[in-house]
Length: 186
Ligand code: GLN
Image (tube, rainbow, N blue to C red; front, top):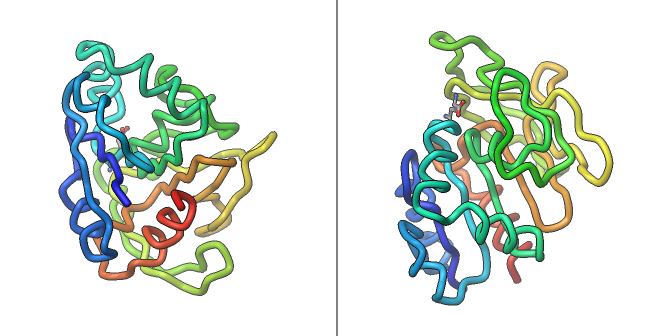
């Protein structure tokens, strides 16, 4: 299985390492011609949503990426990736706008908003969750289903081919979320 990882900015190498650990191949997307290759899924990593949005547009990747996800490409967005996929963003602009979630950007405060905890993910048991200037999901409506909560806030959700987490599963040893995503890609 080959998974594309958007490698414009942010924590993409950590996702690649997880994919290798699970026996999948990783393919970095840096420019338009990288989209010509075939792949089974896409990861949009954490980083800075405004910068990633700007680069997607400047490199003329925005429309193609949006269309592919809309057409069913399994896609996993972490943190800034969640913000890019959300249809509604509080404290931020409009980006790919594909998923029925309202995200609150920098919801835990700008600088002091980094912390770790353990909570259940998708009924699969407790997993470590690391948050870095993270958003949370104010509301999952329409077709989006919450998959995890921390302190009464939704921090992971799924809608058809799209999975998002406000936390960074690529920064902990646990493989649950990446396994879950690879199952979506099969
Ligand atoms: N605060 C960042 C943003 O607004 C997200 C942080 C992250 O991806 N770790 O895009």
